[in-house]
Image 1 (cartoon, chains in turn orange, red):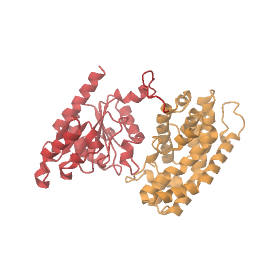
Image 2 (cartoon, chains in turn green, brown):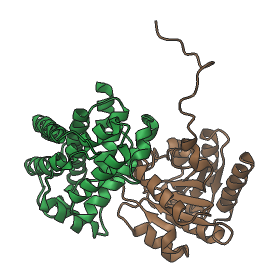
Image 3 (cartoon, chains in turn green, orange):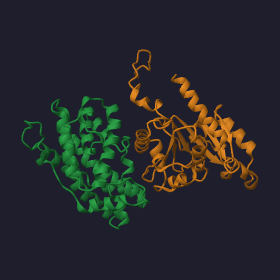
Image 4 (cartoon, chains in turn green, yellow):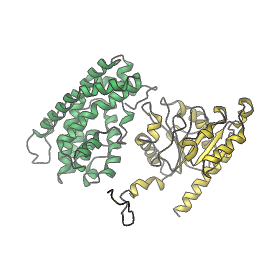
Length: 232
Length: 228
């Protein structure tokens, strides 16, 4: 199933990710990201907060998608949990926009009944979890993909906006690989750590809930700009 | 030995009705071409000329968010709810060809807002001669170049020039001023376009874009005939 995981994490998967900078456009505007070192620090910050949260939700959604009942209720609950873990309205919208994009490609690339049980315009990690399940992957894979995707889009955006050396940017993400793996594995374990879902509840209290006020603030300031290149 | 390349009994897994969905919605016309060639001016002209007879809307792919959208509001008499601008993450070409998600979102939003929509113009951000639209996003595409870019542009080719459904050479009024030979442009375009049409126009002299509007009407008619 490695090829399915690689496909899911490939930036060429046409799910709309390339129009989102994960906050890096505003971080650059604010002077927070300006060179490889500051980019690495920013990506780590993103990985361990929003990335970890997304990874936990993706793993839980993958597990929910793999069960026939009560799939719809579980996914709806997880969508609400994603809202609760995403205080910034701009980031909620960005997540749902990317979720919608992934559903569009996912439901044709990996047809399965679970797509119909997602709420309309689901949060991105939910779409990712369903896509992983539909592609024959497990919750740990979904979490890994979410953790990885939490930094790659931002890295590419920084490369474009700062005209950075692409090899340097590839090096930055390569250096973070072990941390990405650890965040994915940790989130998967957390998502699996709750009690067995006897009443359809996936045990959301065990899901990672890391947020970063800086990312929230950057996203809100960014959303008000008229002169942005990226959707978020 | 490689596997056989046999298609006889092959069930097409890509023949998905959902993928053909936009064939039954509004006609989607891509407007591509280099920066400054007149894409937005052509979009505005088409809106003015066709707006009275067709239910239409426009998607813009600006470098920044609202430049072209603002131009259309002023010049095309289009209300705000018929113009959607998408952000392209510094890659206007990617947004119309490789990952069309943001543009599909915009088209679907316009469709949901205007259920009777008949025509959507999708205007690309200015790009180079290799720019082309994915047919997952548009039904037909118009590539706009201009005379001031030099009369060798059609000869240089590129997917926009050679493969677009209609090539528009704009600003013919400037030909004497920039020393461009329109006959050369017409002949070179004909040579690389394998019979597909080319129109040489001047939006300054014909702000209604009469010929291009006629071509768009023809596209609508032929699609209606196909689905009749």
